[in-house]
Length: 392
Image 1 (cartoon, one colour):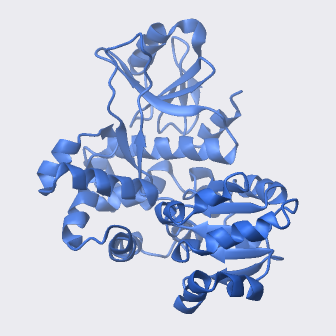
Image 2 (tube, one colour):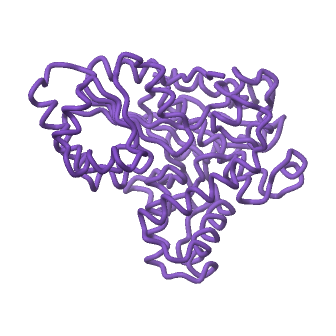
């Protein structure tokens, strides 16, 4: 079953205007299926096959003669030496768009392998897991809570019979055994499995590297190294605080989020809706889901707002979208009916930033229907969240 992706139009435009398009994203987000479906006239080769990867790395000129453009190269990170020769091929016919579409799930290796050589030639696009709206197009009765637990990986919604727990168990094992061993040369996978779970348990919280290091029994430098790989492989996100030089009391540490709520829930031992409603982690996991939906809305709708959070000694906003001195403020609340007090923190932040600069205050909650709140804020359902990408 094919699930339409809202980023399809963005990807088509980029292939129509740029000689090289790089599509990155976590494993199992549907990169290969998407580009093969959208661009059937492109030849296709995957470097998952060792023989193809070996020729692409050792004999790139011969490889490109055998596979001329327009060409999709899947998992290009397995032959970083090929990228320099793709640059040469593109430069020989710079005016032609859509010559190469490259996919990869390990951008750290792509960058170290010379992706910077394609500067000015390549457009880099990230494919996130499914949004709630995309998943609901495949499973019309899907509730926000069920989506939170099941997560956004397309395979889980294309075939609802799949057991999500088995999927995530296999996903985590593949990530630990394949990606980490290649990127970090991790000798003790057990330590990193504990690290991955510790990050999931801290999702939507301020990052404290010292606490992470102490809880797992590793050095601070190792924590920083492992976090960088979690970010680079699209498993986690560090959300930076917004601050100005005039406001010295603002928190400077980032917040850490798992990028997929389903994977986060699995790593936290939450496998059913009953588990979700019983755990004190429901609020942080809901905030994790809202963060992912905001990122996806911005990417899919070509939004141009920067995402951050706000926190000082007396008030905070989970999300602050900013552009050109204007702000949209948002909080994630694990409730169906937020009241006046629920928007109080946003009102305080708006006062700090200047009411004239605030375009909206939003509570992202589990309400089935969005509605206005007293004082000018608005309660917004997960289904209505993509409309925020239309802010201009």
